[in-house]
Amino acid sequence: MIKSIAKAIAQTRFRMSHRNTFAHLHKEEMAHLDPLYPKIFSVFHGEYTFNDLFKDIVAGITVGIVAMPLAMAFAIGSGVTPLQGLYTAIIAGILIGFLGGSRFQVSGPTGAFVIIIYGIVYRHGYDGLVITTFMAGGMLALAGFFRLGSIIKYIPYPVTTGFTAGIALTIFSSQMGDFFGLSLTQVPPDFISKWALYFSEMSNLHPATFGIALGTLILMFLIRFYLPRIPAPVVGVLVGGVIVWAFNLPVETIAARYGEIPAALPTFQPIDVSLERIIALFPDAITIAILAGLESLLTCVVADSMTGDRHYSNMELIAQGTGNIACALFGGIPATGAIARTATNIGSGAKSPVSAIIHGFTVLAFVLWLSPLTSAIPLACLAAVMVITSYGMLEINAIKNILRGPKSDWSVMLLTFLLTVLVDLTVAVYVGVLLASLLFMRRMSVMSSIEALDENDVVHDYDESLVNQEDLPKGVFVYSISGPFFFGMVDRFQNMFMRRNPDIKVYILYMRDVPAIDATGIHVLEAFLAHRKSHDFHVIIANPPVRTRRILKKMGILDALGENNICHSLKAAIMRAQHLL
Image (tube, rainbow, N blue to C red; front, side, top):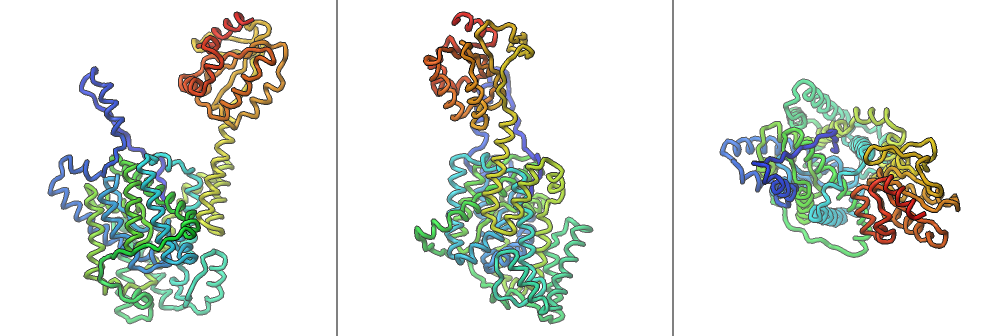
């Protein structure tokens, strides 16, 4: 479930004992801003009391009980067995809880993966999912090791909103077979074929199954509305299961479809890998890595906003990668940070990552000692849990806000939504990010400008003095460049100088408002400078910002021009032009 709690940023405060040590302290804090060690270490370096441990145990048991039905429901919706979902909750809960970069986050199977897992299993089988999860885990771990934790968060908000809504609708659609009690051996993954099959089989609706599913759904909505502190999925599954058992209703249970859940620990399962399968599954692995990284970091941000803590984003990616590798090796499915379970963890009074570890051991205890009760859960109840989960994934207010915004934003959101529902989540993410990036570059290009200074223009120089065309000697021309000088504005730069007046002997490029310049901009400047001797003109750069000047120097532009032709102000550049003339 990818929720975006907007603008929840944990701020770090730097303290200093006296003014003489400020620079040293600031450097020390910046060096440790995002350390590569688990958050649990920093917790135990502080004051961790027995009272904190007691609160972590209570919170962990509470979250573990909540995680039980969710893990099984997500696994069934993904096309795998409930036991594989439980194993994922155990492995991810314990391992990521220990290694993670967040104090409060709880990891496990989530709704965001349901559709892509179902598609992988449908096309490549469970062993294909294992390879995909292993590769995605390696990508996440490497991303954290190379400190890419901040970069992965730059996926545009309309894209995340679009594919979250698409995932919600697809999850809802995938549960209708169990919700209505339709006897379907295999459901196609694509949206239209799936609903066509549902409508063709609707005459076989099973009244008892539909009644239990609908009643469970209504009960969970009522609990959420009137008793929000009580975990609705736990109550819904418990009440539904008791009713089915008490009245001996002919409703299919986990045991009836998948067999009894064995009371056994996860065991190591070697991976059968080939180059052909790696190539075929690589795009899906990238998608899982992106979704896992994005959702886990968003969950960390939400947890920080609720508690005032600050997570270590890169360590979190390493933990997520390690956890997914372990899930692949021990019979699980992809895992990531779960916002609902994390919020429950915080609301239950958790004090440290110990609660996430306790949550994993709680699920393990259910598997080892209460598997007969777990096997008796009706599938209709889990289908209702998935339906209410898909409803919770719909960010209705966010969708309304985007629809009221620029056309480019809501068009990206709608396109991502439609591609997620009708084509494929992988395609939706790639196309959405690509389109959003192109629109961003277009916006940046519009913000950037190259303008010739004429007699009606006035330029505020660095010292607030005024310069206009009348101040310029004959044969001198000024171009004012504003905004990032990147490939999006190169065409305008070239067109400007194609119309060069041969009477102009000195061109001044006023770059006060150029915060950055890329390789394409450097290349165009080099091409322009290459024509100086053959076309008999000079070039002066006036007032470049420190960062831009550093790039120009590093790329050899300043050496090509000469230090005398790099001026600290426009007036100094005009004086240099007079000297050249």
